[in-house]
Amino acid sequence: MEYVLTTSGLCKSYGRFRALDDLSMHIPKGAIYGLVGKNGAGKTTLIRLICGLQEPTKGKYSLYGTKNNSRAITKARRRMGAVVESPAIYMDMTAEDNLKQQCLILGIPTYDSIPDILKLVGLENTGNKKAKNFSLGMKQRLGIAVALVGNPDFLVLDEPINGLDPQGIIEIRELILKLNREYQITVLISSHILDELSRLATHYGFVDKGHLVKEISAEELDRICRKYIRVEVTNINALVRLLDANSIAYEILSNNSANIYGKINLSKLVIALAKMDCEIISSHEQDESLENYFMNLIGGDRHD
Image (cartoon, rainbow, N blue to C red; front, side, top):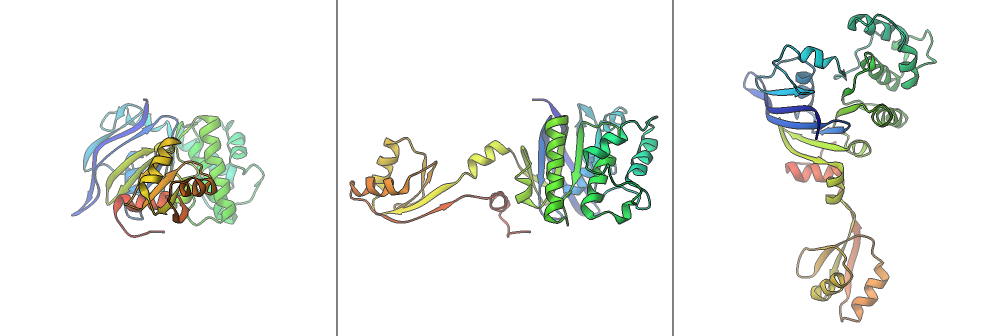
C-alpha cells in the first residue's frame, strides 16, 4: 500500500508536558483519514508538526516518502494544503483577492486557477464582498480554497466543521467528498464530532493523551459496529442450534442472552424457537456508534 504520510515514534514536549507520545500512524494514498480524539488529545500538535510549523522533540515522519529531516521536505510540503486551527484568510479582502495573495506567497505566476477554485468551493458569486462579511461556513470554504491554491494532492483540515450550522456542515462534507472522489485528493481531518466524521472517513486513527490508540479502516469499523439484535431466551442451547442451522452470525453473552447479527425476521425466530421449547424473554435492536467505540477504546467518559 502506498502512503502519503507515515510517522514513527513521534513525540512533542512542552516542558514536562508531552503533547505527543510515541505516535506512529499511516495515511494511505486516496484516503479520507479521520483523526479522532478529545480536545487536547494532541491532534492539532500532530498537524502543526507535519505542516512544518513546529519540530518534533523526538521521532520522525515521512511525507510522500521524504523524511522530515531531509532538505527535500520543503518541496514535498508543496504537495499539501492545510487549514490549521482557523482559516488563514485576510478579512478585509474578497475571496478572489485572498486567492491571489496565496498565489503570490507560493510564487505562482498566474491567477488562471482562481475561477475554478472559487467555483469548486461555491464562492464564485461573492464578488466584492469582503471575507469579514462571510458566514462562518463561507469562511471555512474560503480557507479550504486558499489551501487548494497550488493544486495539492494532500489536504489537511483541523476541525473544519467546528461551530458550523447544519447547512454549513453539509456544504463542507460535500466539498470534502468531491475533492476526494473527483480530484483524488487524500484528506486528513481532525475532529471530535464523531457522527459527522463517520459520514466521511475511509480510515481512522484514534488519539488519546498523545498516543495513537488504534488505526482501523472504515470497513473494519463497520464490521465491529454493525447492527445486531440482543435477545434474552429461556434456552440458549436451542437458540445456538437454530442460528447454526441457518448460518446466522451471533455472539453468546451469557447463559441466557446473545447478540444476533444480520437481517432477522423476529416473528419467524419466535415461532421456530417455540417449537424447540424456547421462549424469547426480551429483544431489542442495537448498534455501536463511532463515539461508543471510541469511548470503549480509551476507557473514558463520554465527550462532546
